[in-house]
Image (tube, rainbow, N blue to C red):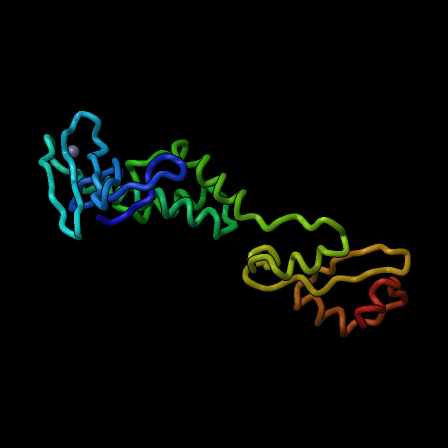
Length: 190
Ligand SMILES: [Zn+2]
């Protein structure tokens, strides 16, 4: 039995061949699974590494497994990428042979939840913001894969700030002559 992410939040399904099962019960080391098709008596019973199957009353749907995989993939990508959920959905479903079997409305909320729960924690104080952004995944400090966070600065009156600048912009700035420089920048040597 191969675990596969289920349709509902946090649910895990199991596949064997083209059929999808849910774990039914575990007793004395025997694990039984039942078919996710409600009107089907199909079962799988696993004991001492041996799997015994009880026949289904329907043909297996090889696409179902692919659909669950695509759903899990959409969710994972929603957490990893910063593209809009709609763009991600379009890209992934167009590349999949079962893309036309899933609607955006079905997966939008689970993609959104995944994205929310992978957001880095908000720092408790402004002084911690720079450390927080350094610990966050790259996409929170990058534009087109270029890191744009240049440092954290503090002022004498306990103000704190972050400096974002594209490296190209910094090299242009370094060739310029300034009439004035805000005090806060002196501490970073710009
Ligand atoms: Zn079945």
